[in-house]
Image (cartoon, rainbow, N blue to C red; front, side, top):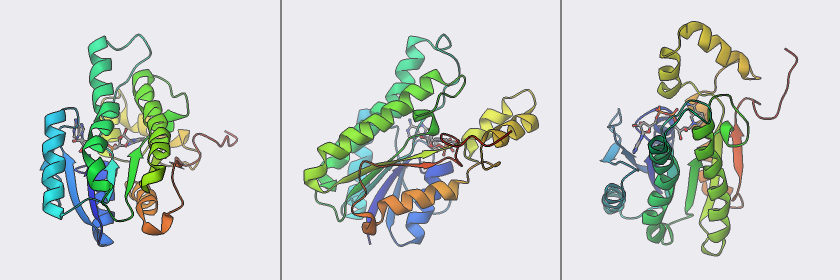
Length: 241
Ligand SMILES: NC(=O)c1ccc[n+]([C@@H]2O[C@H](COP(=O)([O-])OP(=O)(O)OC[C@H]3O[C@@H](n4cnc5c(N)ncnc54)[C@H](O)[C@@H]3O)[C@@H](O)[C@H]2O)c1
């Protein structure tokens, strides 16, 4: 049995991942500002706050007796072109989506070094590599997640800690539900999002969890510095309209 912490594990992709890892026999603690459903173990955490992360990682590691797997899924959304956001909004979003990952990994580092087949998976996005409309700030954070994943994978080579990313396309989670609810015609907005996906539908949370499951599996020992696109072809395929 390996031991995992999952930020953002109370909802959407993080929750599906927490369930998948638990169901395959891993010990899981969710680090989130909100409590998860089910009876998943939980340490209330704001990844935007260093003290909160320090305490949560310590509590989770104490609870599990060590740490082998870190999944960074917590993030916040931001919509708009380059003129849309104030400096404060830039600072807040970068703090949660980018520095939050660094904070969690910094605290996890000494424990992972002692871990069994240790591995980190960061949830990036198709926005890391594709120019989506009205997503400048969000894309900046997800581009950074991709870049830091590769840099971390390099630094950790001598330690045996693997670092990879999963980059989902538009996934059917409460995150997208909130975006659709804010649209003038939510039903039409959903049809448009589905049509944007080359596979013609949204990604399921379980499909993303399955990718995280692969990357965190001990049998994926040669896979590091990889970005696994789970995007229905959004960044690479151009089917006829
Ligand atoms: N849903 C998509 O279409 C999509 C696509 C690409 C990438 N992603 C990425 O996937 C990840 C998960 O997204 P989701 O769709 O599951 O969203 P979600 O809103 O369903 O879940 C996000 C979780 O993160 C938690 N969270 C937010 N801020 C936090 C903080 N400061 N500290 C701790 N926890 C915090 C929330 O409470 C929530 O439980 C994010 O990194 C997102 O950028 C999502």
